Length: 374
Ligand code: GLU
Image 1 (cartoon, rainbow, N blue to C red):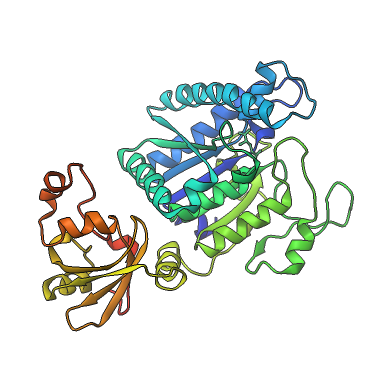
Image 2: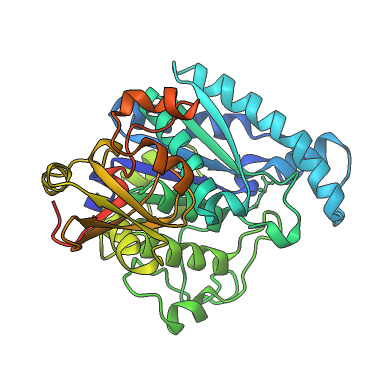
């Protein structure tokens, strides 16, 4: 098995609606889901962290509400999602509990992954859940997401979650076992691609416009997901979910298409912080703090002597020493007004000063890109 899989410590698994619910009856495919959960439990026992992105709320909800197979209006989709999501949550709670694991439901909208302040919240919660050993089960919050603020497909949502969580690997389980040179059902000469390292026009052309017509994602959204994942330093694999125990099958070498990222997630994230964001302000830090950062530590309020600029929580800021040299950049855990009040203070004093329990660090080391690295 490839090392992109064996070495992956944090894994996001996305399953499509067609896998979760039966095309004829619309009911949950309980046996298949049980086999997937058993696979995830085995990974968790081996010390890997798994986040499951599950579609199927709308497909299941339309079945429960008796809406048939006709196209639904937006409001009907949202109503169906509200009903179906409860059913999904119930199934996951039960199945994970059977393996001694706790499932945790996370419903996200586009803004939660795009807006830095909300992004930090979602990431913090999911990291906490993983730290406690729970399994986050993610879906789009379809009930409140209207068309303009909606992903609409869980392929891209899963890729954003993988990037947000600096996952090592994203698995898209689908009704096809990979990316083909042409639609396999139409072209007998169609060949599955084993590995993609660069997503160029050729790969986009292969993705064509094949869609299962049941969930939302076709091959195009999967290739878009790959683009998001690779930019975040996350490897991605498309594999078949039409078989039982699909992750065990993948581990045994089942056919699939790998999309290989060049940088690792931490390096990709630091590059993003260092280059892609416009800094809104600066923290001036003392020599002790500068030494701590150089040794790989986080920036604590105690080491900061002055604050410049107007910034919100989650914004990028420069970190400068007292001689005015820029040491690096990072995402601040506090907005300007709060930051000003806690600089120079010990972290245990934050709650008393601000009246709420915030983060101990002004900039966590994972949210920091130093010019000369620690
Ligand atoms: N979020 C949708 C649902 O749970 C599915 C989107 C998709 O099929 O990718 O029903």
